[in-house]
Length: 400
Image (cartoon, rainbow, N blue to C red; front, side):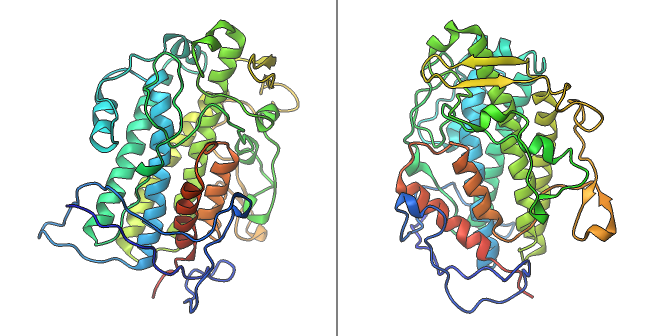
């Protein structure tokens, strides 16, 4: 089914506090979080979209504006995840044709044949886990199916899908294994937040109460670091190349912990039981991804003051089993959440996903991805599009 360009409907305001049942009565401005980047008025365009999947009767039914907005933002987030994971897959994943063939059906110009990978990158993944290439492959496939399925669901319910094809303009890595196509995300200038490592090990703090956490790898939070080789020249510096792979190992966890929180946060705003089922079902796989990558990141080989030969930026990967970490709560094989306070501290500690507050969840996720450096080089139009989707998702309220 051919799609039509659709202009964004009025954005309803966020309910006060955490009340997701309040009914809005006026518009919210669309200038949100990137004022310094010149983001202003926004038009939402579907562009080229996937074929519609209709119900068994061959007809479509509508969903609420709020549910559609939440699903559309999640579809866009999954498109971004697919883009970054495909870059990891091309260089470090298992090189069968399963993922590339699937991607070629939905991404304009994406090659159907695998690239053959980057043998040195794959080799340096092994210290993190001998199955890393398989996990990268499977995570990539998962995100691709998520974006396709959610968009098909939106189309089947007469709602505009998310489409980011017009923004596939960023440069690819020039290293062996990378396809030379336009990208949505930049994996070569990352500033990686690794505070999730300490957050999930804390027994006394919860970000939903405003608590903050120290990063596990402080130097990744300073400067810009590649998580894939920029060119084959990076292979001339063995320690630096391992640092690139280590950065990727922690970036995997950074990305997937975001999805782990985003789905339950937005699920609190949906109206339809079926849409709730969708968010709970897809969100559960994000949790599985995060637990996998949290385990593998802890195996990253220690490195001290490794210098980027191009930028001069230094990075250190400490032994996380040694002070100031280490001990019962910080051992690297501890991959299940330590119990902490939730909802009300008087209830005592409980093992939970954190954070799961719903107010501003979509915009918060977009801010985090932007701070990560994933969108360095993207246009104002891209930020306008994504800001609109996030604002509309955060403005959704559960209808009674």
